[in-house]
Image (cartoon, rainbow, N blue to C red; front, side, top):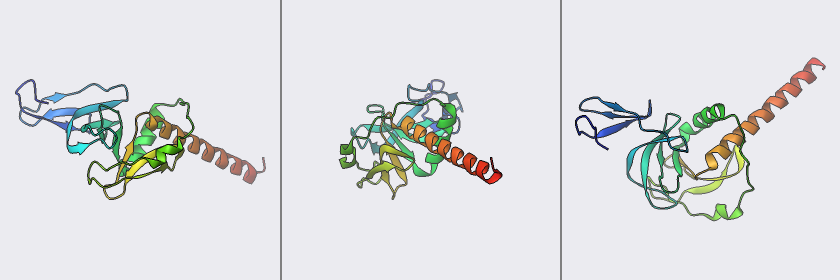
Length: 176
């Protein structure tokens, strides 16, 4: 994408979900899509592990990710994952219906968009019925469309269970 003021290329700035012109310093704020993702432009030589479409540079809650505009999957740095889940959990307090896992999902073959080696396909630890792809070498997680909210809700349930356990232990310790 090019700057409408001077025609120079725009570069992503994930700090504020914007595109910045390095030449004239103009700033553009692309809209969020239905997934809450701000698409900032094409990623270099990375293709979606599900549908082989070129990935886009994007942000979700000011976290730099890569996004597939076709299947709406997300490639998320592992180091950013906990903060992203916490941010989404705080922003969306409601719950979604969590369907049962399809065991065939564990048989999927995903290739890491960065190193092009097989990804590990397994359950996400904080949401036992959500299957994601992971590349330990590149420290990236692949999350299919719709699963991020299920992970957020899984984290919410775990936090609520921990709070109830602490509350129960506190009451026991205090003799209530």
